Length: 148
Image 1 (spheres, rainbow, N blue to C red):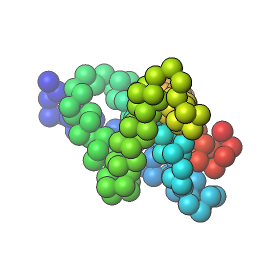
Image 2 (cartoon, rainbow, N blue to C red):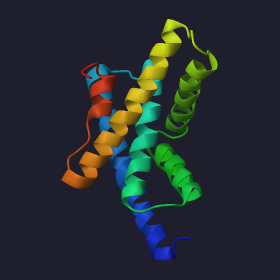
Image 3 (spheres, rainbow, N blue to C red):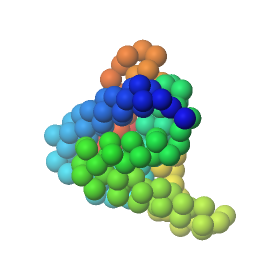
Image 4 (cartoon, rainbow, N blue to C red):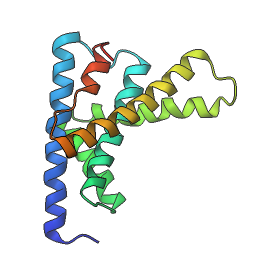
């Protein structure tokens, strides 16, 4: 279990991640006007946010999954209260539909599952670049604005 100082460090990391999420979503809204208008956007965002957060916590040697989920929810609620957490949950559920459909999923369901997986990959890539290179992540904004 983490000590008090380590817990505080992870809260600081979660706060910084929240600023990054807020920045990317704000940039997307400035360009697009509205976001989260379709299942693919919701699925990609869900996969991206979950994996970005998890990967960043992995870089900080976190092994407390319960604390990670608690701080992830708090971070989402700090960026867009209630709605962003719902989007993360709904996106995961949409991706799960592809698995439940078996070998012949409906085209739209398959596309949504692929968007979720693309979001996961993008989240890991951006987290690694943020951690190792100090670069500002942008793949979420790019996806939501149709660039990616």
